[in-house]
Amino acid sequence: MTQASDIPQRRPLARIGTFFAERRGLLRDYFSAISGAGGRLVFSLAYFIALANTLSISEFGMFATASAAGVMLSRILAFGFISALYRTATIRPNLIGTFTAGFLLLGLLSLPLLAAASFGVYLIFFADTVPLSVFAAIVFAEALLWRPVEVALIVNNGQGKFGRAALLAILATALRALGAVLFMFWAQHSVWIWSWFYIGANAASLLIAFGFFYPRQRLRLRIELYLRRLADSIYVAGAEVLFYLQMEFDKLLVLAIGGPHLAGIYAIIMRLVDLTAIPIRTFSMMLVQRMMRAPDLLSRLAVKSGIEGGVFAVSTLALLTLGIVLHFFPNALGKNVAEAAPLVALAICVPGLRNLVEYQAELLFARGQTLVRALNLGLLAGLKAVLLIYVLTTILDTPNLVLSLNVVFLLLYLASTLLTYSAMRKPAKPV
Image 1 (cartoon, helix red, strand yellow):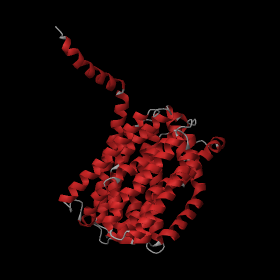
Image 2: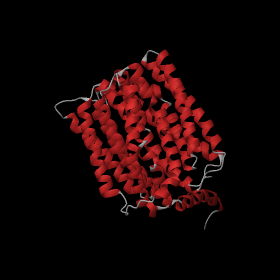
Image 3: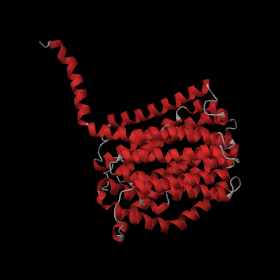
């Protein structure tokens, strides 16, 4: 016979069981997506260890900074029309072929602007430190080879095919890791030779992405559809360029002000910080998809603060764990990384604050507030530039420089929070 005292104990268990039962599909999708993030994390770490310990610290700094610039410049491709393709895959998947044709057309039309912007960035930040041929090769790999691979990932995620997207992410990252390992055993080690390995790895990823993972639909040009979405896409492209500018501007400034060696040490630290963002981006991607269908999902303060607290805690714990490992085993990630190992723990708050700024930018994209997002990111990029120039020109020793980054990113997070949640008081725009 059931005792009355058992009922209060069973009710919470029943509620928990009901909660998970109602969200079984969502949990299945999340674990499918996070498996790709986990696999990507493993191969990204292998890629980082192989490359950072094969190139000299100075050449690693050159490559990492040029790669960051290439990622930023790649957002110019197709004038940001990838955003329209993502929304189509999420809401109207039968039009993927039509919008893919638009992406290809606009991609060709955007090439002169992409080339001009790349040369301008080179003259401003890289002319004195990186050969033009190396910079051009790395930007080519990022913008014209890797960015289309991201398109295939975005479309699969938009369709809810998280398992396929996860497999593609793992394969693409594994190919980069394989390229870095092969480069380790090559007779000569220079950033120029590595750029050719990098092009080869990204080209192989592109062939696999569109040969096996992209949806099979007939390509149809419908110019009137593209024109209606072009303004929004340009806002997104501008916002993405500004987003990556404020995310990666520190690397550009360190190279320009501190030189290649300091840029290499800084790039090693920030690459380890970047690794903490891989699982967070999976969560953000799924949240964005839900917000496209339900823009008021984060209307309650408890939900907002709970999610942000979780993002910060997971990111901080990840770097703290890595810092502890490197404190006791400084050579765990190789001899070159060992030089930066004592500095990793000094950036303890940077991953969480940096990931929160990225997460908040995605919220405005999900709500269709693309122009406001672009303006906000422009303000954040300007603020980051001012703060970093002050830090780099007044703090000369590297440990204090890294420690000061916690304050820099805290100020950026506070500014982002004010701008983002002020904008979210306004009604969401239909997508």
